[in-house]
Every structure is written in structure tokens, then in C-alpha cells.
Image 1 (cartoon, rainbow, N blue to C red):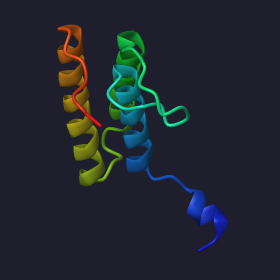
Image 2: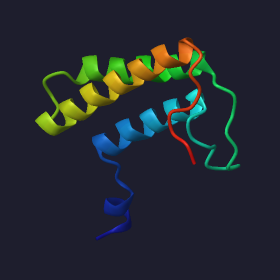
Image 3: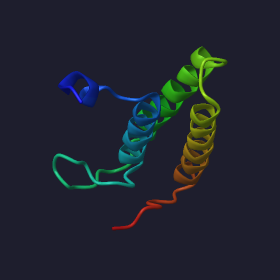
Image 4: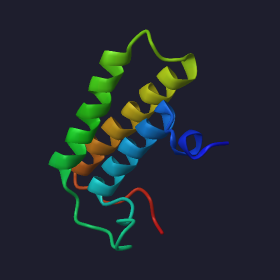
Length: 95
């Protein structure tokens, strides 16, 4: 496998990376560079949810069934987490 093939990112990996960034903004996972958890930034988390939603809208009809399900499932989970965070619930992922 060439370096170019190894460095390609799949749509699923891309969407998961965006969801992971949202989890970072929720304060649910530590920053991969520092290992520290940050205070929740709900504005930034909401922007990531909006970005995934925009990608869902723009790719409608062009995704495999598995990719479409992944986006649907992640958006559901992130939206539920956002509601929890707005209500003051802190982290859902514990070390």
C-alpha cells in the first residue's frame, strides 16, 4: 500500500473525527495534545453539530447506507449530548 493510499481518510473517519472534536468541546474527552479536559464550550460543540448536519444535507443520496446511518446515529447522539450539557450535565465519558 502506498503512502498516498495510507494517508487517505474515509468519509466515516472524517465524520468520527468531527464528532470527537464535539466531544472535546463538551469536555467529555481530554485534549489529545495536552491530556487535559477543558471546560465545556457549548458554542463550539454546537458548531460541530451544525457542520456534521450540513455535511449530511449536502451528501444526501451520495452516501452508502452504512455512511448515512453513521451520520444519523452520530447526529442523534451529539444532539442528545448537547441537550444534556445545556441542562448542566457534565461528562458522559469518564476516564
